[in-house]
Amino acid sequence: MSKCRNLWISTALAATLVAGPAMAEKLGLGRPALPEEIAAWNVDVAPDGTGLPVGSGSVEDGEMLFSENCAVCHGEFAEGVDNWPKLAGGDGTLDHEDPLKTVGSYWPHLSTVFDYVHRSMPFGGAQTLSPDETYAIVAYILFSNYIVEDDFVLSNENFLDVTMPNADGFIVDDRDETELPLFTQPACMSDCKDSVEITMRAAVLDVTPDVIGEDEVQAAAEISAAAEAQETAPIAMPDPKLVAAGEKVFRQCASCHQIGDGAKHRVGPVLTGVVGRKVGQAQGFKYSPSVEKAAQDGMIWDHDTLDAYLESPRSVIPKGRMSFQGLRSADDREAVIAYLRTFN
Image 1 (spheres, rainbow, N blue to C red):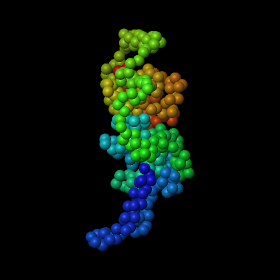
Image 2 (cartoon, rainbow, N blue to C red):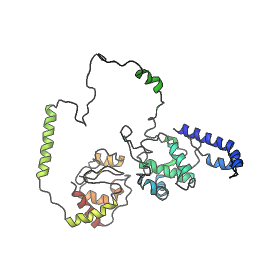
Image 3 (cartoon, rainbow, N blue to C red):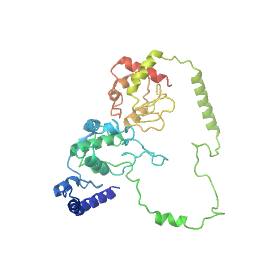
């Protein structure tokens, strides 16, 4: 992908040098680009690091720079705003019908990220970022995709040490040699295989017959009994006024978290049923290593833990990805917890 981009850039520059003077003379507009002007735009960076400027930038500085220069389109956490591109998320979706292609899930070369930011961003102010600022913003984008930790500093010296998750996801298009011969032969219509056997089961769709053993039946019965007991147990519901207040405070969280029927993971996980649950248990959400460690240590989202986390997230889970500074008001925290409890 980067090679194609670099070839296009080189071709475009050559065309400008050759056709520019002729077109300017013919139309009577403008002037040929000066060599130093062309050199100013010839800043492409190759996957092997060729073209990288000397410099460095931290995730911490990148968070501030990203907020000032990029968040208006890409969101504070690189989650995208409206139809502007999402830069984070999409892990494991490339084989889905509607994949989410982001820097973390799709881009194979870090050089492409640096080149694009350095050359074209921010929108309307291309090439106003210094190399150090570009390194910092790229570091924050990496952090937003769980590729580096929050204390990481990206530089021209460690640039090639960063491996993108989809680095091996692109292959050479060899369909003419591999697929075309297979599909241009006469189709087999009978006795095509010696035997037919089930090799995979569509368990999610519930269409593949399966045999349930006694252990599975017993486990299902125990789960059902536990669920029934939980449903019949008396639950003291929080004060409706407190819940209403919590719903208002929760609006500060809604840009990253959804809750209730039909909720989906966003920058943060769905919070339905979170009160009283073990940390890091929302199915289908990729948690940071810090949250995974807290889960391994047995942390539970009980009242006291939630209260402490809402007040200062990183004091409860150090190096967590939660960049929200916290709720200083104890009343606000109590109200949010009451609101969360109604979705249990």
